[in-house]
Length: 226
Ligand SMILES: [Zn+2]
Image (tube, rainbow, N blue to C red; front, side, top):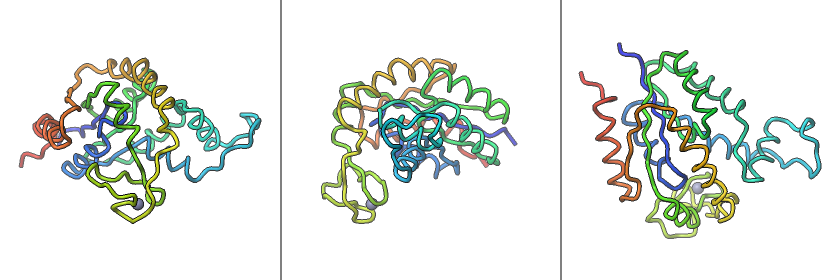
């Protein structure tokens, strides 16, 4: 048996990589490690620390929550320990990493962990321009109850999965988006350059075309042949 292969699924927010990740996870029997979803769960279930609370009196979750509310990227050590856990539990198929690495530091850490677990890795970048990212994110809604985003064609005010109310994410205000775009440009792009080969996909096509390009690139690498 070949050693399992993992995928780093990269792209600016709004590139649609979450949806792509779900499809390829099903197709190749892989599990997804989605940093954003895990962090949103913490955001939802953790109370904001009182103003002026010293950092050393906060729990890890509270520190993460406070960091996110400032619009900053979350602590590296916590994210890397989540990665270590997921990699130690994989069997024959690899993991899809969505939302990591965000920084060159995370890229180096991830490479070391992948090596330790004998995991090969492919980087798939769904690329869209900053203008397009901004346009897409300002329009993005999520469900207050189940946290899912409605499909792009869904026009109602309620969730197409559970009927819950749709709201704009608190971190999707334009100035916070711009700050994350700057982080992407200054930290994530150099992080991806830590990897030798990057499969680049044009993310400004229709979602169907994006998916088709991704599958065309990954099928020869991941599809079981027998
Ligand atoms: Zn819902």
